[in-house]
Each structure stands twice: as C-alpha cells, then as structure tokens.
Length: 423
Image (tube, rainbow, N blue to C red; front, side):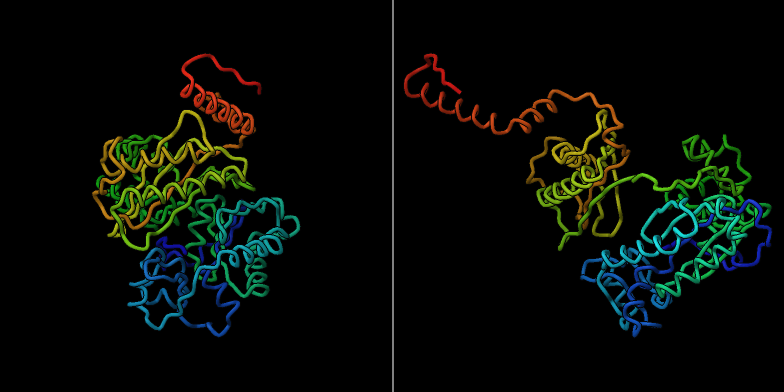
C-alpha cells in the first residue's frame, strides 16, 4: 500500500513523444484488498481493510477505506474508530503471492523477460527488446492493464519513462488504475513539481535534514550543488543521487531476478513489555527464522539489524556489519542481543532480569549485505572450526564425551591414576 505523495497537477498529459521511454513501472492498486474483493465480489464498493487483531496494524486498505483516512501501518484500533462499517479481513499472503505469481507468469512475462520484481505487487520492466513486436511502450502498458483487469479482476497503474526513478514516480501519480507517460524532454519538469517525499528513498529523517538547509521541495533540491548537498546529508553518495534525481536522472538499470536485499522476521507482543527475557526470547525466534531463510536460499549475510517498535508506535533500528558473514542462528542471535542493549543504552553484561527502560511493542531481526555462499570466500574462525567439527562428527563426539565421563567417574572412585579405554 503506497503512501507516497501524489499531486493532482502531475496527473495530466505530459506529451506523446515516447522516444527512449522503454522503462515501465507497474504497481498493483491496493493489491491485498483488491485480491479480496476479486474473490468476494459482494465486497465491491465497500471499505475493505486488511489486518485483524487488537494489536495489529493495517496491512492494506481499499480506496473506499482510504477515503476515511486509513493508511498502512495505522493501528487497527484507530482504523476501526475511523471506519466502524469497514470490512476487516486477515492477511492471506499465500493467496496474494499466488495471484501475483500468476499475473507475472501469464501477463508480464508475455512481454519480456527483462522484469525486476521488487515486491509481490510491483515491478520494473525494460521493454526495449519488445518494441519491434508491440510498437510503442504505451501500447504495452494498455495491454498489461487490460489483461490484468480482465483475467484477475484487479487493476494496476503504469508509469512510462526513460528510467526507473521517473517511471516509479509516474505510476504513483497515475493511481488508481491509470497510466502516465513522461517524455524525456519533460522529466526534469515533472520531478521538480514534487515535494521532497515524492522522490523514492527520501524519508522523514532525510527530509528533516534537507528542510534545515531550506530545501522544501524537489525544485529547491535542483538548485543545490553536490558540495552543499554533501554537507546537508553527510554523504557524498547520497548527495550525488539526490542531485541526479532532482533533474529526473537515474542510471540504475532494470535488473531481472534481482537478488534478495535482506531477509527479516518480526513479531508483535500480545502486551507491551519491559521484560528483557521476553524481548530476547523473541529475538531468538526471529534469528532462527532469518537463519533458516538464509540457508534455504544459499545466502550469507554481513549485516544484522534489530528493529524495535515502542508503545507510542515509534520505530528504532540499529545495525552492525560483521567482518565474517553469517547464516546461522547461533551467530545472529548474540549480535541481535548486543544491538538491543546498545539501542536502549544498557551495558553489555546486564542481567537478563533487568527491566528495559521503554515499553516494547514489536521486535525483529533482519539480515542484509547478502551474497551467495559459493561466491563468498570466508576465513573461518577457530570457534567455527570447532563447531563444524562437532556438528559433522556428532556421533563420534558423543562417544568421546561418554568415554571422558566414564573416565572421570573412575578417577573419582579410584584416584587420579591413568585410565585408558578402547574406542
């Protein structure tokens, strides 16, 4: 459910020159809610909110529900107050993923194999190799929208531009159920019409830093030098990207089958808690899930991040990048606990029964900086070698342990003389 700002002034005819506009950004409209309406047609026209449970948050909402001020990540209790007549349904990710897979396989893949899927309901498409057959990018976009609506009874919006940045911003402003072409000659004008948050990647913290430099919108951003932007953001890389974005430029190519950027797991407590043991127990569960996900994808991670949500619904995250990448829970969990203590200002050796200084509503662990195991040279530590040796020769190690225990028993009974056993 997109919360990116949209401008009525941006949803207009920007011209019909499609030269070089070979990048499409396709975004399904209110996808989870639309999937539910598709399988329950009687819900058509009613405010549908995805998410149930007293302490849950809104995962998605139909446009009818959004008219009541409901948006993603809003506490369900508040959504119920805003729209008591709404239809509240549980999240059914298995169903949504199945619909998504069918859309990609039966519609999108008929155009090209140059598809970068970024979420269950969103992708970029490079159609440069499909123009000989289809003619114009707008013809492709029209066919996609009509096919998805006809076959799956859900709608999608499409942005068409010369690059991913402008295509995504175009699809956002085409919503719902729209299409927006931004010719190359007008992409800077289009982007500079937007507020700062209209550029993907600019969140509240970065917006605040830019505001402190009297940068209030993208038009202001476009007047800044990279040098000043580096001072404002503290990063030359961020400054360069912002400077390019403010003129509608983006050199990031469409990357088919893009690798996973991160894997994570999180849970919401039934009751807000200050119990370190409860939070650490949850971090252990999340660490196990992340480790299982990494191994199932043959991935290894260099960065571990812990996420906390407090009783006031504010978030905090803290990350640590390791010298040696990991994919096991016994390596991830200690990092997660250390990050938890650092986030809350607790000393490393604090007892587990120490109450936390803030009420915790949600906790989670994620792994990023991913690479494939076979492509990552690793110098194992001594602990790794010992652990692997015990794991791979478990039965032999058990026999040795049992033998050592027997020897200790004999020593205790008969003194410290030398005892040997055949193994």
